[in-house]
Length: 340
Image 1 (tube, rainbow, N blue to C red):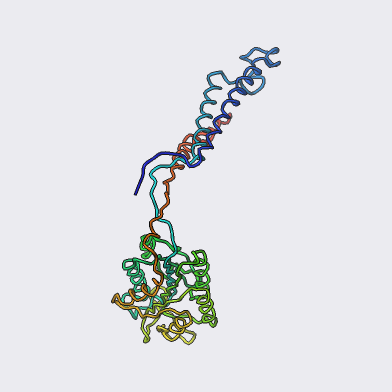
Image 2: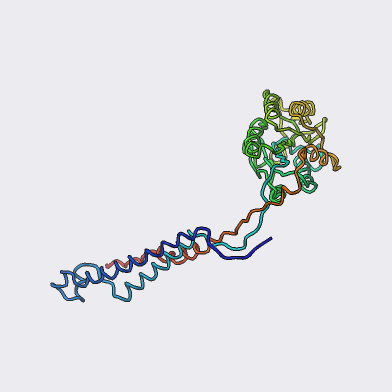
C-alpha cells in the first residue's frame, strides 16, 4: 500500500542554513575594508585594475555571487537531508522456509541431451519453482569455477525471474565446476538468517564435476541444519559438450568429450545432506516435491502481518540541480590569439 507524504530523512542538515548569516556579515565587512584599503591613497579607483592585475567586484556583482552561493549551499543541504515521498509498507522477514538455489552454468550444461539444453531446462525448472512457490523464500547463486550471487534470500521472486534469461555459460570466465566454493558461499548467505528458520539448498546440475571433499562438506552443512536437495539435469547416456564456434570439446586424444548425468554422485550428496533427489522432467511433480521438502516449517499466519515503511528516496533531484548549476563553471577559458 502506497502512502504519499513529503518529508526529509535527516532534517537536521538544514541547521547548516545558519552558516549563511556569518558569510553575509563577512562579505559586508570585507567589502568595506577593500574600499578603505591603503592602495586607494596612491591611485584612482579606475586605475587600480591596471596596477594590481585584479579588480574589486562591484556591489551588485558581489551580492549576486553571494546569492548564487546561497542557492548552491541550500541545494547541497537539501540533498544531504534526504527528501522523500511515496512510502510503501513492506512485510518484514520472519522465521520461515528458505531455499537457496545453486544453478550450474558450466560448459557441460550446454549439452543438448535434454531439450533445449541442460541449462535451458534448468532455467525452466527455476521458473517453475517461482511460479508454484507459496511458502518458501528463494535465493539464487549461479556457479561454474566461481559462484555468483544473483539474488540473496528474498520474497521478491520477480527479481530472480527477470534475471533468468541472462544466465548462460558465457558468464563463467573460467570453465569448470567448483561445487565446494558454491556451497561455502551458500552457507555464508544462509548463516545470516534467523536461527529459527528452515534453511535448504537446491543444487541444479548434471553432476559433471570431480571434487574429493564434497561429501564431508555436505555433511558439515547438514550438521549446521542446512539440508541439501538436488535436481539432476541430463540423461545417463549423455551427449557431446559444445565448445566455441560450433565445435565440440575434445580430450587429449582428440575424441569428443561425452558429458553424462552423474546420478550416483548426486544421490550420494543427497544422502549426506538429508535432502531429496529428483531428475528434472517436463512434469510438475519434481518441482512440487522439492518445494514440499523445503517447506518443513509451519509459520503461524500472524507472523507475516508485521510491516515496515520503506520510502522512495529523492535526494538525487537536488543533486542534479546542483550539478546543472555548477556545470558552466567547468567550461574552458577561450584561448587568446597570439600576436604575430
